[in-house]
Amino acid sequence: MALLDRYILRQLAGPFMLGVFVVTFLLSMEFLFDYLDLFLGKGIDLLTVLWLFFLGLGWMLALSIPCGVLVGMLMTYGRLAQDSEIVAMMASGISPFRAMRPALWASIVIAVGLMLFNNYVLPDMNHAFAGLLLEVNKTRPTAEIQEGVFIDDFKGYNLFIGSLDDKTSRVEDILIYDFSRKDEPSRIILAKRGRFEFDRSLGILSLHLVDGEIHETDREEGTVYRRMAFQKQTLNIRGVQQAIRKSRERSRGQRELPIGAMRQKIARLLEEQDRYSEKSRQALEAIGLTSVTQLPGMAPDPPWYAGVVGLLGWKPKSQEALPDTFWTSKRRRRGEEAKVTYWQATAAAKKINQYEVEIQKKLAIPVACIVFALLGAPLGVRARRGGMAAAFISVGFFLFYYLCLMGGEQLADRRHLPPWVAMWLANLVLGLLGLGLTMRTCQISLHRRSTRKMSCARNLNGEAESRC
Image 1 (cartoon, rainbow, N blue to C red):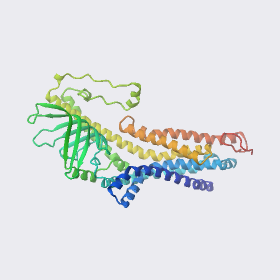
Image 2: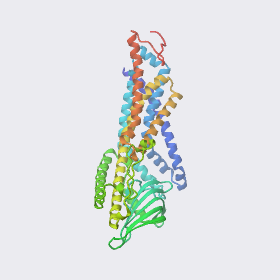
Image 3: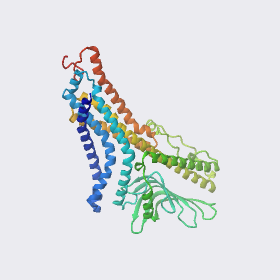
Image 4: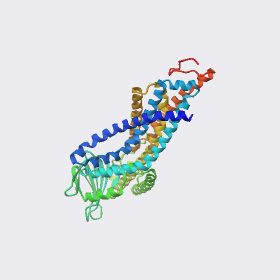
């Protein structure tokens, strides 16, 4: 039977490579369209562009290899069925499962190799890609600013950006802890939206804020609490170039770390989350409150299923507002402290979710190779074609998988779904479908042999094609 295994693996190699090449080409076209203007406008040399393209191939291959497995299975087994080779195997007493077995083993080997690639090679390629991209893209002031985390690289400021559009430099849900003014108490600046501008000659990063508030106390004993609303405000941050250089040298994003390093990050973030949660709890206890939702402007956090339940009309229960007489200057200060530490704990929890999503993704995408093998082989036998039918089926299943992966990542990052559910849902759905199809395809032969002493060939509709 080793001869049969080698024959099927040789038949699989060409379609698999073709599928990987086509999907990688399509993904690279999107990449080139995104950055071609930037490269031409800046006059970057061809060698740098080619090296950047090579480094970008890492994440493309991580997605195109599972799709290549699906294309290879559909085209190979479709051609075998169309040329009646599956019929000949069944007539010789070889079951469809025996014909699928070498392909399933090959998919397991590919999955293990891709898992190692995702964990040990891809993070370094992503890190090198991000570093090179920053070198050719220095004019964007937001290149090193991350959303959803507290940024303490700028002297005199702690920034929290809820949402960031790196292409337009527009930001939303901004919180700034300003302690840059000498001999004056610190202040908290909140704004709904804003925009970054960077002056390279002066090294000044200007943040134009819109629709916000400034919270501060008087400069002496802090007995007077002031809250000022503004429509427009500009904050100038100096020394940005040094801060960006320092950040680039020491930080890696979650896509640039292996699983072990991300586990260490998660452990530190859990400690940070507990520390900030405890500070928030202590600040609330000092003013006689039990939850941050009792503070002005704070709504209860929706549960992870709120995105689904909200479609049915679910709304969070609102807290009764406390009277103005309750809020003395000291209580307001403690309330703002409770808010800030609560947001810091929430930011740590969001970052933990992002690391967990990336860990699950590194494992779920390679397992998709096995899932697509279980799905593609029986579909190829039933479709009996290796051309356009295989292409359309491949595109349909891959789009479904890709949309589930990207949508699940967004839902998990926003804490609407647990990370493992978001990343493994597509594998579970397609895996069960593929397992059912594989079992059904194999049962055709078993049932046929059990009812007749001699093996008869069947066509794909289960009808007798020839007599034994």
